[in-house]
Length: 588
Image (cartoon, rainbow, N blue to C red; front, top):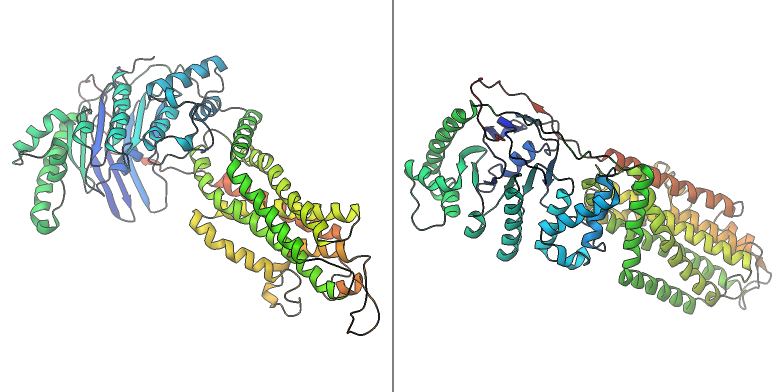
């Protein structure tokens, strides 16, 4: 284990402004190796903004301006975000193995396994290493987030509310893990919201904010005396509760509260200027761990293994999908007992239309629900792999399942409904419905990639399905379609799938006259004329489906490639006055 106790970095005058509103007001502070630092304050104080700014994780926008400086930036910085996003069907160990093989590709597999074992031990996860992530507790998930960032042995660890949403026991377990990291000589800084007394006492230093202003920066052991010197002694409340109460705005006496905050902020600013006129020595330690991205082939191989494993372990969900396809096929097959009379023409059109609409609906619904959540995991891992290996692995892992479920429907419904009993017609039916299902799944991926959230994707879903059904070739003619919307049938999967099934089924059929109808027979081609399908071909429809499939994947790839988060660049603050050096790590 490296020692990180050498003097290293200094940062000062952090300021963040969004749309003319200041979120941080020229904040400076220190954090030393081996010290556990808490960033606290009331809601809206700017805690997470400060942490993300220092860690270079503040998302860029046109209206945002950020300034600040860090000297001797360490080469290994870890940032643990507030949300714990993982693949539910991967085990704890598999999650870490996946990350280390992509993060530290130049290390031997033996060394990578040592890193995984060390991260598990440091975070107390060794006992649950073979448990799937979906089966561990919230506190264990939080520690797994920390363990993943420890794989490349960071010098500094930043955490955004690591105890938020946890019960007191889980919060203390997380805090003890952070305490152990600091005791190894790392700089550990985390935002803590309303900490318990037990958790708060594990920290060494406190950065206290209120409304974007610095209220206190220093050892936690001295904060009581500091506030007492300003006329705010602690009486019965815990140390954490007292500090937060002093810097909070009382809505019942806002004027007095703001006078109190101005007094505290002025004192804190004076103290910070005195401290930061003293420079810290830059850390010249060589980085003995070279992070190297894995090759595209290795990325694909690891991503495919994870995706295929998750698909295989989702046995319950897969069983439900299979049962759904089977029941739908049995219902359709039981209702539609087709014969060769002219009355069966309408029945055939109805069955073929329902088959395509059903496969489109199920495929789009499945991918559109899951992908927005998965997209957030992918964005968090974008430094590990590219968009193309990810998308290719997902397609390779999921298409076989999608195709199998579609084939299950076709194998059951085709003979039960008594469609044309030739092997060629049967295989064409399977091919069309399977391609339609795969293309619909790809369309769902695209909508999910474009949508900002699962709720937004689900809101778009009915619109996609309704438009596809309306323009399926049977519900409205081209002449009756508004001119501005006549392009929609060309991108309707339901339209092309229905057209292909209709041409496949009706071509070559001869229908007997109705018992109470006019005499004479009708051919399948005559029936196709009703929908203007006489000159259509299965090949033409399959080509259109394939183009929609390819276009959906291509646009999904472009969306993922361009969705990598961009972080704000910091403007340089005014230079510090040069004086003697001081042996501590100055970080804010």
